[in-house]
Image (cartoon, rainbow, N blue to C red; front, side, top):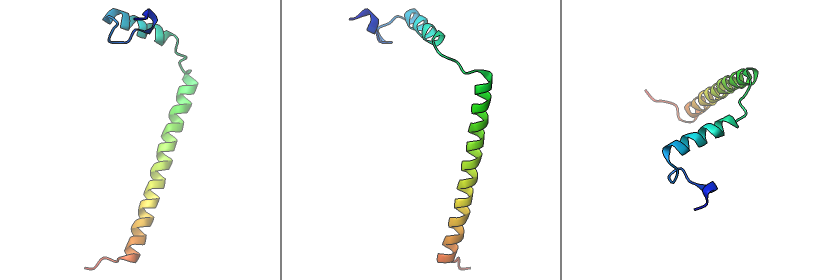
Length: 72
């Protein structure tokens, strides 16, 4: 087996942990400003999609009552 292409199963536990730590050191982590702006954008998009879904639900509910009014 090629030494550079060890899988997680073939590696010992210590080798695997050392490999993970080495890989994490190479990660480019976001700055605080990037993290905050991405979080705000995510919350904003969730709110917009939630409102959009609510409006569509109300519209289709109204439309279906026109097509098939409830009897009671």
